Length: 309
Ligand code: G3H
Ligand code: 13P
Ligand code: ZN
Image (cartoon, rainbow, N blue to C red; front, side, top):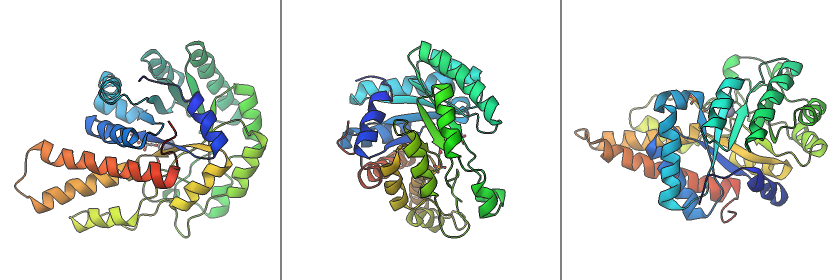
């Protein structure tokens, strides 16, 4: 039981065409809910912390809570920085004991993204930490751009190969149509599988990462709304598309929105059924159980990594 690298877990996933869930964590209940699911399913696990989560919980709390979860359950966890925007935050996380960091230079021009990524790779590798980078932009539907313009922001396969070669990065997040949050597609869901296949063919040994991979199941949106929520017509990545992507090099699937929806729906239910409730354990506990159910569903039915630890 330990904090582990993603290196071995990705090599196995790449070989066997399944993916590993990278779940965003913000507090104790979310960490416990996810780790319990991974323990029951005997699945490999990545817990990821965004800059916003680090700020919300304060850095020491999340790392200590993850360590506590490992002691409590014996589950191996890769602890990953999600969307590090500069060298400084990546360095801090390496120094804090993270086993993996993401440097997200996707908003920069190609050469600047390479230079920034290389700087992080040099520091992280010298400390035994692996690095994820991103090439291409995850435009959201809220950006209100047409499909053609949107696909121009997708990852270019030749650039992806050059990027990996020149940076020595360990894994690469690519843009093929997903976006963050609950509103991913205006019309029919669409992922550019031909582009994914080309990228995978050019860099077959590089684990690929799918951000914005929540499926935003209607059931959970409806449940939030049934109990007083007002979440309008959300739409996520269909689960069969995630399963398909895992066949072409997608090894890490990032999920945050689905956890938020599952937890919130359950907490709303508790309040709707018990308006007099004010003991946080009585609503955070069921919220934690809802996270466990969601993560077990992902591991078993979507990522196909049950029993792969
Ligand atoms: O990609 C973003 C993740 O969902 C984290 O979101 O920055 O609100 O913590 P956050
Ligand atoms: P979702 O918003 O689809 O859950 O994506 C999360 C993510 O990509 C975190 O980096
Ligand atoms: Zn992301």
